[in-house]
Amino acid sequence: MNALARTSSHPMSSSAPELDHERKFQPSREALEAFLKDIRSWTTPCVYDSGLPFAFTRTTYFDTDGLDFLDSCRAGHAQRLRLREYAGTADLALPPVLSGARFLELKKNTGARRSKVRVSLSADEAAALLSGGLPPEGSAAAQLLRQLPHAPVRPWVTAWYRRGTHRTHDAGVRITVDEDLVFALPPERSSLGEPATPSRLLERAPAILLEVKWRGSTPSWLEGLFWRLEPFETRGSKFEQGMRARLASTSSTQ
Image (cartoon, rainbow, N blue to C red; front, side, top):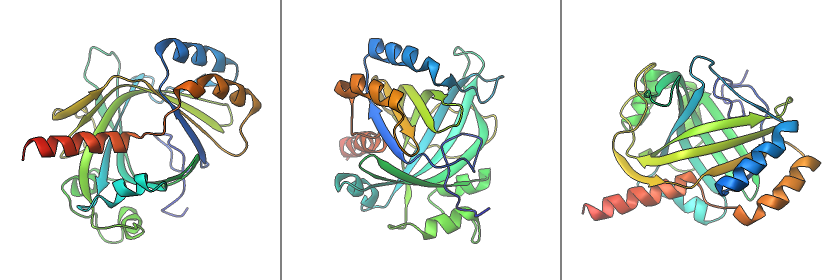
């Protein structure tokens, strides 16, 4: 398989088909509960690790010193480079720990269309990127970095959130619900089993984020549900929101 395979966002997979459409919503709690009830006939909840059923995601975003990736969002053809890590816990009273799965992703959005390239990273490769360095020459991560439209890059901000996932039996539709979102300064390393919750917080974001991704034509059942969600639709992104928090923090300390 090509080292730069296009993939879905399944935490433990690097070969699932691309889901090339995406819509985002910030629903009320009541609207979310109604939506989740309505999708039960077509989707099932995903539990990636039965021993750690409460799933979390830690996403660190990279940009150039000139903020070229952030500018791409404002121009309507958003591009993001991110390190995505996964964590879990058996009980919400216990701290989540990293699963050891980590990926470097280059994501591009134009309207509702999306594409993504992702490669798996070792702990050492992730540590190199988080320190502002480069992965070893010849690695899949180094190949991806050579494809970047802007360089060099460094880590700017990290998003941390609890994620619930639902998908259809053919994985053609994936629905994620992100809660307890916070933005923080990037971590310094990524090691299996270590506590994952960021400590250097910048901002808390209380809104629920519902993301719906699908492949090909929109299923008829999903079209009907979109109509009810339209009042809650949003065009924003975690990357943009997190960068605003980081830049505001930088300005306040100067």
